Every structure is written in structure tokens, then in C-alpha cells.
Image 1 (cartoon, rainbow, N blue to C red):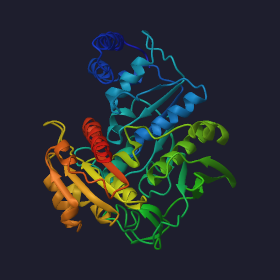
Image 2: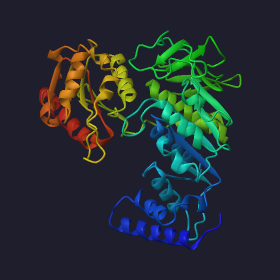
Image 3: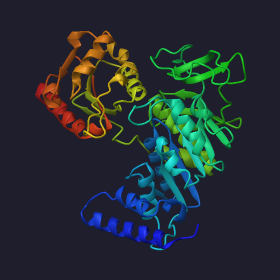
Image 4: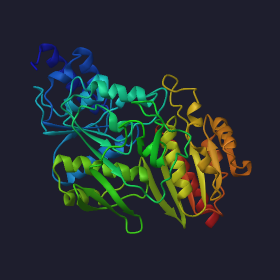
Length: 458
């Protein structure tokens, strides 16, 4: 599209602002794009974009999948632009294109990797056409952000460009059915020994066939609505999987994937089913992009999950795990609770799940607690649960409703004071669960845990 005077004013002003922010040691990830869009609302249509655009969306896993894709591309000598350090809404994506262009608005790179908030589809896809779009999954999420899955899937279907090739989770009957006329491939994981015949979680967002309103029959359930299902009354059901994991060997840290009838071997970098799904999504995307299985695996096996999402360390025989569990996101929390329950040994869990970060964007709504499976935390292997933060009493009530024994729970407002009550003598691992907005508290609490371990050992 032709570049106008208004476009150049927006571009040059944004680039000057970007340099000023750098001088002030500020992260120029949001404001330059916001400025450019305020001057030229169709700025993203007019600026030159890379030939290949890889977009990643979905309720959970967007950041992890983007990080993995970028690391593999970098390891294989591809140059690209990304919004890794910026916002995943329209202003952050505009900033990415500004950073990746010269003063005439010409792009410097051939590839872009973009994390796109699914709720922002209406502000992003009318202006850019991804070559590939990965959708990791669609679950119910925060009422402040993404509301219900039907609402989000309808937005995606309406705004995803028809030319975009979709890489979809075939084990998710919601996300696998977005934009039905687009070209697509599916990734998934065949039935595992740990799968069940019916949902044991509080939430299942697709129990009824969306075509004929009959009850869906699940062939197996992994968690929530993730699994394989079919309708006995019509042709609705799980799709044929193009990139299907047929075996996961946690002992050898390997997985086998069937691709067009051929078996491919990949090294596991995680034992968490959520992140195994993220790996499978990345593999499917990169194989479609053109990399070989060998190229993908050689790069993937060098990686680890980014430490802002998951990290572990052993101090004097005690394993300390820090794990993101997004507040107001019941599925994300349930998955972490289930993961902890299934881990070996005795554990203590510290919950810092407050979503309260400022008065404008926080919510007093606590209904998400009742969609999250706190019942997983009543397992006998979990010897102590420390609940802290502004809403510690709300979480305490929810734990009581989950029948967690009172004597196992410590609840206090102050995070460090609460952690000082940690009992480590009968546990092998301590899990610190935190929200996106409590990462700074995660580090302070971990420091206190290490201090307690050192004092006890001394």
C-alpha cells in the first residue's frame, strides 16, 4: 500500500521516540507502536513486512512456543524480527515492525515471529496476514481478558485471513475448529496410560456437539476438554492428526512422532504434558516451515523452558521449583496443581496467585478459584500449603472447600512472613507458584526458602 505523509510522520516520530526511550533506559516495546497508530491508524497496513510471518495465539503457551520457535530459527542461522520483549497486542506488534524497518519503512528481515493475543485479533489480522498461525489451545480465561471460549473462537474465525495456513491442536475440539475454510494441519498426542474415559476436572468447555447439540462421546480425556471425541449423531469429532506423538518415554526422555506414516524421534526437554504439547506445536510449525526433523530436534534438545515460566534448583538435597500459575486462569492453575500432585516425593507448596497489580486492571472477581481444581492439592504427598498475598483468605476458603486439612495450611497476608513458617524437615521439594504480576515476589520468597534450608541444615 502507498506510503503517505501521515505514515512517514508516524514512522519517524516513533523511531525518534524509540531512541529517546533507550537513552532513558526504558523498554521501548509499547509506546512507539501506540504513537504510530494514533497518528496513522492503518500504519500496519502501510509499513513493509517480512515475506514470512509466523504468528502464535491461544489461551496458554503462546510465549513458550514463540521462544522455542525463535531459538530453533536462530540456531539454524535464520534472521527474524519478533515481539519477544514487547506487547502481544496491536501496539506492540506495530513497534516490532518499526524496529525491524529502516527510515523509509522498508523491512530489514525476511521473517517475523509474533505472539498475538487472541482477543486482539480484530486489531491485528485486518492489517497483517500471517503465513502460518499456530493456535496452542483455547480455554476459558480471565473475565478481564478473554471470557469464554466460544466468544474467542468466533473472533478468531472472523478475523484470521483466508490465506493463512493454520497449525492447530487436534486434541482440542475448540481450537481445532476455528476458521474452518483455511488450509490447516493438526498436531496431537495419542492416548496415554494416564488418560481417562471421562473428564475428572471441574471444567469441560465442550461437552455438547456444536453442530447438532447432542452429547459428545469422549474416546479419551487428558484434561478438561483436551482429548479425542466424536458425536454419535453427526459427523462432528476430532480430526485426523498430521503430527501425532505415538509414544512418550519419560525414562529415556524421548518421544516418537508419526508424520505421513514415518516415525520421527525427538528428545524431550520437559516431563510436563503442557510443555510437551508446546514442543509438538513447535515441531509441526517448523516442519511446515521447511526444516527437517533432524534440524528441529538438534536445536530443540539444546533448549530448556524459559526460567520466567519454570525453574528448579537443588539446595542441600531440597528441590526448589518456581512455576508460573497464572491467576484468574483456572486451567493454567489446575495443570500446575495436577503436575505437583503427580511428582514423586513429599512436597510443600507456596501459593502467590494474586492477580492484583494495579487499581485499573485488577479484578475483585474471584470466581476463577471455583473453576480451578484445588482438589489436586489435597493429595497426601503435599504436606504443607502456604497461602499468601492480598487475597489469601479467598484462597484459604477454596482450599477448605477442596477438603484440604486445616493443619496443612498456613495463610498470612505478608509473603515473607508466611514463608517463614515453611516446614522443610519432612519434604523433598518446595514449589513456589506465582502469577505473571508477582514474579518479583517469587524471587524474594525463593530467597527466604533458601535461607530457611541453610538455617535448618546448619
